[in-house]
Image (cartoon, rainbow, N blue to C red; front, side, top):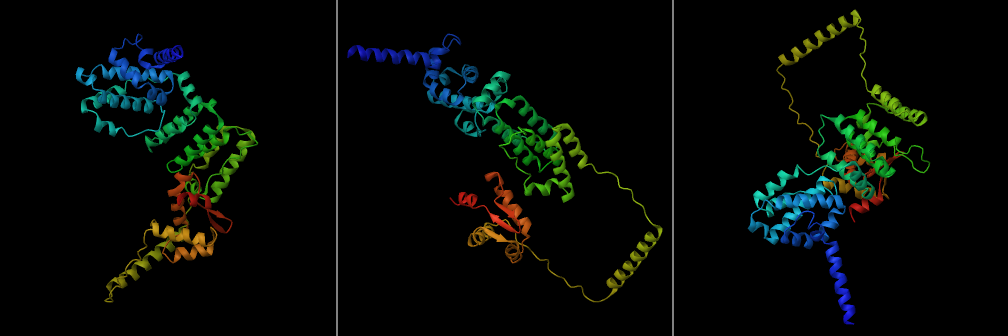
Length: 390
């Protein structure tokens, strides 16, 4: 029995030395005894949050670079070093998109100002990942591509739409082996986002979306949602022409040609204007008559009626949305156009604008429309509504 206990203890000790980061990098990084202790005590969290060996090595180098510039008293402060490690982990996670970008202001409050400034200063020197390291991250973390896209959205400059387009395409080209679904989602979300800023680029990204695994018989591509149709096209004819471009692309698989046709769709040509001399004279006569009538009106002593403008309340109020949702529920989540028109008119609302703003506010939540047209009816998505009130 004693032999078994000793064996278990020895095995546990060997395992501790083998897996603890302090002991692993002791000789390689010439660690001091308390540096070994800090890394050993934090090994589990470091491995859990950074996962990959190359990320862990970058973290240790970054942490030690800051730690070794601290005063002796600060180096031996265990609480201070635990907070410093947490901050350094957050920096590496943000740099390599290992997790969603978080606000680092909490560390500004818990760390001394000079240490916080030192970390932020050295953050710029953290090395970029190699191509093979990037591929490994993407192969093992499919959500990473979405985190990078979210970052691009945050730093997006609406005056440089082309830059955003190039970044999305570069991202897709470099990581085309990560799988079909992440790439489709990337281009679909990018098209939807850019619809607010540049319709040509938005439609080119939609064509990229159609191009991902376009030969698949098991996947049906999403059509451009009605919410975006009004942003991307001036009229129904323009929309139909783009649908023709998509159909032609499905047949000839020529993406560049589809891009050219899309750009041509929005080029505004110069229209020739021919003026008839009689039309000009007629317009001048009408202008003279209107001027005379206006002069007579201004010279009269009749007081001008001061009519108050009709004030329409904001259609963004929660009360009105609740009234609409209640109306949908009382009609089994379906209303016809007449019922919706009566509801909107009685409250001084524009029906289409009201519906569009509701869909706009909830689109980021569901990645879909909350209220959709179905023939002559409007349908409130029952599942989404239940999620909102779950």
